[in-house]
Image 1 (cartoon, rainbow, N blue to C red):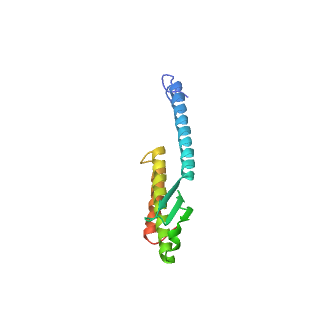
Image 2 (cartoon, one colour):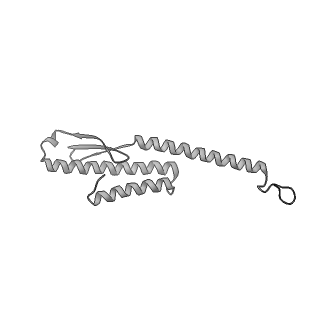
Image 3 (spheres, helix red, strand yellow):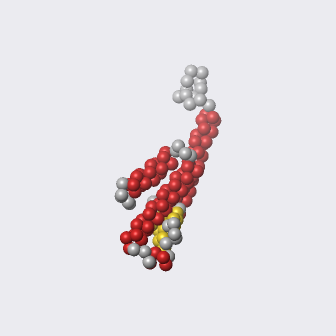
Length: 136
């Protein structure tokens, strides 16, 4: 099909091909960044330590506890106080892991990208649930 004057309705075929190749290259680059971001977030860990060092907790980006260490002073604590300190320290690690995950997404896709916004929203929801007395 051609327009009056014999030109293609898509304009210059060579320019169209270059434009299409550029779009494909950009899509491939975004896919690589997404894969790299996913791997980096999956490997991400954050640690927190209680003020006096009785408890050290590590979580992954989803907030799951991946390591918990108690020093000798923890053994001398009242069980309820120790339980509370474990929860508080774990929450600190979760918050740090969420912030790190958002930073990874921001670096990969930018502050205002949909991927960064979705991850930030998820982290904020987790923090809000924490403040409501809920955990997940």
